[in-house]
Length: 212
Length: 263
Image (cartoon, rainbow over all chains, first blue to last red; front, side, top):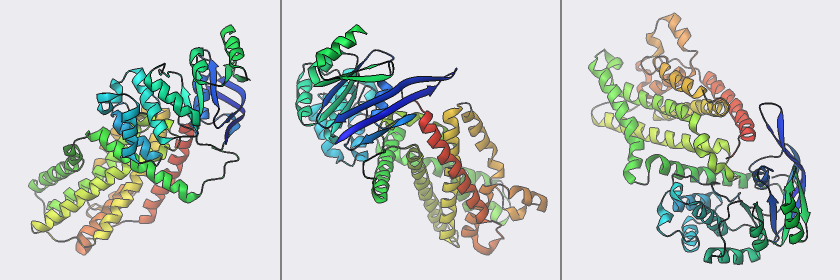
């Protein structure tokens, strides 16, 4: 069970010509691997995440996916801001064919949102939003969790519970925070100049990233 | 997703799509009317109130026979209300649902279908209420309720084709939205809501029959009043106006999806 990118290119139309964000990305993510993808601001992290999540098509190249991959979980992704966390949980449960009530119960016990669960998502702090997104995705249950950037888990009860769940599933974490990669991942890659380079040794990846 | 994964069966795709549309309908009801039961009533109350008002205004203006008929204007207005509701909302559909596109099984047409279903269910409900009310107050039972429902369905599809097209176009050119609202108001006198084609002079009949909506109104009146007058409509013409905009709209939405940046 893998998610593979084969020579993926992505460019966007700009005022003058096209902006090439990804220039031939090759990657294999296997089930159970916890991969950290490090990239500086503006190197195309979010673009890569959207392509991995299947919400945007590459301009060239192909994607092969034989495992279930979550939607890109991040700050704003996948929520209706005017609706409450519980309503959003129910909506996402429904579109993934999961029982709505159980999902809400799981989110209630896991996301540590308290009364905020019944408040509109637009009133949430960034940490609360990422906890909500992660909790819903854990309730739906995927082979691989795709997480974009603001993962404010840290060494909290939630963070430890999340890390425990990841022992049985895969993670692709795209971030600019080396500390998160060290905490959660067992493999790392660096995104630079539109290409992705994998390092089997995390320290080597972090060293490369820090020298950029 | 492409590649080595086994291609999902058509029936599974259909099931997923129905699931998504169902979830979108519930979500749409929550965002539009809040979580209060009374909010849902507004969905029915708005067309009910407007339809009744239009009908009362025309009744007090007088006229003979069918021209002074409550059902003629109230039920006719519901048909127009649905058409305008679907077309006017179409320009905002993508923008207000953008965040949901992070879930790959949510497609752009689904966002439209969910909204259109809500609109048409509400309007069909209100139509039934008007029919029952008019029978209760001494009116006649419709000649063919089936024809009325077909008219409702055709109007839904007619509006849907246009909505898909407008939705695709406005995601590229924002300014178009204002034109759409103006056009849908200006269309009112030419829609067939206030007249039967048979009442018009011959040169006007030819002109007005270019408007596809007019044919649907004639079908509705045929179902309502039977052979009390001579309805004039051509359903193949309407089908053309349904099919071509659907094709252009769906193609346009596919292009729009690729160009659409998620925040």
